[in-house]
Image (tube, rainbow, N blue to C red):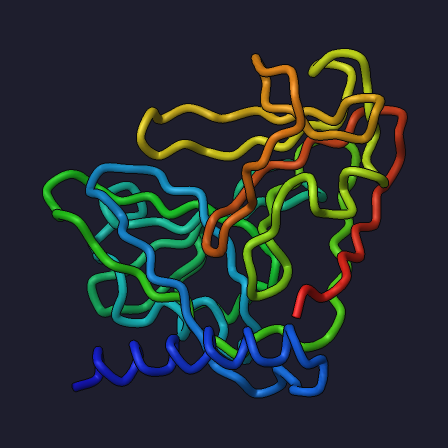
Amino acid sequence: MKGKCVGVVLAVLLTAGLAFANSGTVTSKNMVGFVKLTIPENSITMCSLNFDTDKNLDELFHGQLTGNNTPGSADNILAWDQASSRYVTYWRTPIDEWWKAGESGVTTDTISPGQGFWIITRAGEGTQTVYLLGEVVDEPVTVVFEEGLNLFGPQYSAALGINESLLATIGHGGNTPGSADNILIWDRGTGRYVTYWLTPITEWWKAGESSATTDSMDLGNGFWYIRRTGQGQLSWSEPKPY
């Protein structure tokens, strides 16, 4: 019965989303939604949170994924620490608690709307389903990209076309992929990144192609934003799409 109720919540979210997108009079505040992720065993999956929640990481992933006795044998969540340019690892213990690697108690760390992270699963677990739940993001969200690597996702509760985003006009364009800002999206099927680069004509092109991409940043998916050295910090304040 619980699974059916969650499905109804999503249907209500989508229907109401169409309503307020067209009328401009209906607020998204306190509207609940979720993203369902299918995670293969022995895999790495790039994800992001696209909802508001007051839950910490342990509460958000409670009862999900597979625990074990050590970080190396349990499922992991890897968050990117921009300040240190390294990952922070969380692992599920056998008692269904999420601990930060190197610590010995349940974590109270949080994941924010638009923050990207990785899910790592182990062999022999089978395919798992992960639900990311929360309220539809209602307040404006500003994402800050530092020079170098930044792990993020759509900051609102809706998919966003790469060329429909403000990143096409505020990012740093260049004549080659190696001189421009890049977006890297992980392709789970091939186990490789798909690279997009910002051209001098303010269009994002997929590497190897020669026209503006129609690809999007989808709910639940994360991406790397590579901000080129010497271009300074970039503040991304995307207008709310609903």
